[in-house]
Image 1 (cartoon, rainbow, N blue to C red):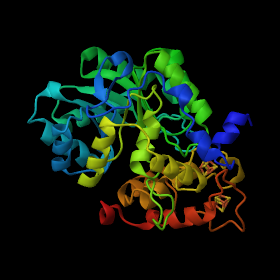
Image 2 (tube, rainbow, N blue to C red):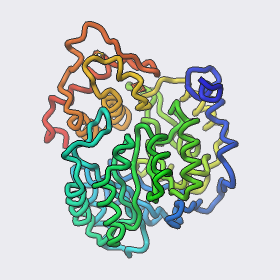
Image 3 (cartoon, protein in one colour):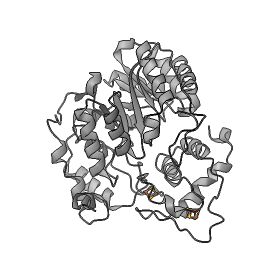
Length: 394
Ligand code: SF4
Ligand code: SF4
């Protein structure tokens, strides 16, 4: 392992200090004062605040209104969030304000993609993708969305899936979508580098946080994206929200956001906002991204803990004879215990088609995690959701 990677891996004692070394990424950053800090979203030309609204877990239009009134411009949802209610809530709110006063991003997940390999199947069709997008537009009560992402892409084959890509290009040509992008939270460097190589993409929405152990590769891909004019939006910025299942140690949310924004190649972030307290904290970062001494200490302490964030590096997969989709199960675990969102955890478990207690047939666990996660324990715990009827949670 290269020295820089080792220092950033979380395995070294100095990992926290290495994570704070952002000098090479901070070119031209305005760290703020009393004014909202804006950045331009690559070649889209959209000038937006560094904090946008991740609506994913919120069905509270009063919260969206408060963010809009405070100057937030970009609101991010997805076809699948809250079984469609998320888009409907946004459609109801935004139908009462001028269309040119905000930017709306949504995501459509292609059908039939293998959650373990990220590969498409014969169910992955342009027609299915377009039908889902039509329904999203209806729910949003809009003629167009500003950004449409192909959702949850983690393979070159999906970045280049002809039918889906052509469907997106047609939507852009027709004006029903202004800009096209990809969202990714697994194999992000590979996905982003492929997007840069292909030259047709406007925006990438990527996981990015101080708990990732492959930051050298990800930073390098983001730099390429920045040079190619691809707008970069960061998600999963809170690295799971909590550092332990028992919720004794929270990730410092302002420190985590400021850390992400210390990379000038990141143009905006979409922290999930579900409370007015969270909104207030995020609005403060929207005007000031300078890390305080206490926030630096919190990042260093957080780096030293195992946390709930799975890198989705897939290193554990070859060791599992049952071919379990371990990264997705760890993400469901984070949704449940980090975000406190059983619905998202349940939806993800359902997508993987894993049954309750899939480790029962194993005498001992032969899969190992680079972060030292107790895989069997976590999988046994979270897979209980597979036996809970959806309508009890939704
Ligand atoms: S215990 Fe579970 S995760 Fe571990 S090898 Fe067996 S099936 Fe895979
Ligand atoms: S569980 Fe561990 S090894 Fe497996 S993908 Fe997540 S971080 Fe990597």
